[in-house]
Image (cartoon, rainbow, N blue to C red; front, side, top):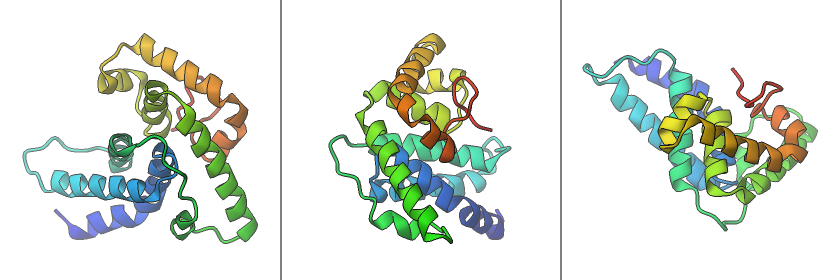
Length: 179
């Protein structure tokens, strides 16, 4: 295992992964950072496992792992912690940073209001980028049930569709997956 390769992955993916986990945990920065750290620990172990199957795209693997870990750490009825999140952002323009913080707040509040299963399906499909089949397998349900959960989540989040596109969570494609 090349430590430089791991360091490069960490530098490239840490901030985007914290942002994804931040949304999944409904604004709990500590839980988001814990999820990302756990994912990188798993990444390190996976990179050093000579018998493990090779990972073709570490960014996708890390995204899916972070969302899974964030879902495990997600706790309802916890206030948003947007104040500390500024330190993870690297926005050169204060106006852009304030606008994104406002968008994050709205998205986090609405994600937190979703029922558990639609939120989990939305996080795995649209934030982690898993396919519908992969989400179904992860959640232990059928693909059609995943589509129902996604439809319910999209319906609840429809007023925020522009914000979700701005954050890169959904696009115009049905199902909302980017990539």
